Amino acid sequence: MSEFGWKKTSIFFSTSALVSWTFEGIGVSTGFIYGSHFYTDLLGAKLGNVPISINYMIPRFPESVDALRIVTFFTMTFVGTLR
Image 1 (cartoon, rainbow, N blue to C red):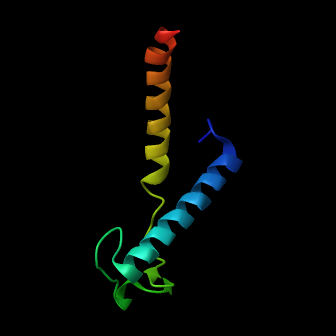
Image 2: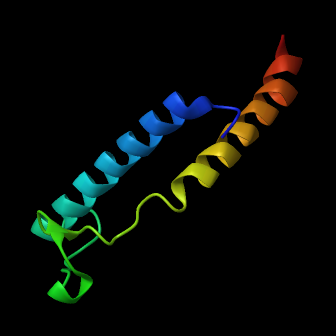
């Protein structure tokens, strides 16, 4: 996280949570994206029709850091050699 700072990390987490929740809400309401599914009340309180307990953030940040490093590596390795 020190590579990105608190501000960028907070923006990333907020944006990722909003986008993830929106897509999940659309999926539950319409069946579009993930297919027909629903959540029971056993998962606790819901925001719309998506349980708050569904944690979208656990894999997002590490995946993003890895993706950034991979893109940087390939950009420096392959694109840099094309110049």
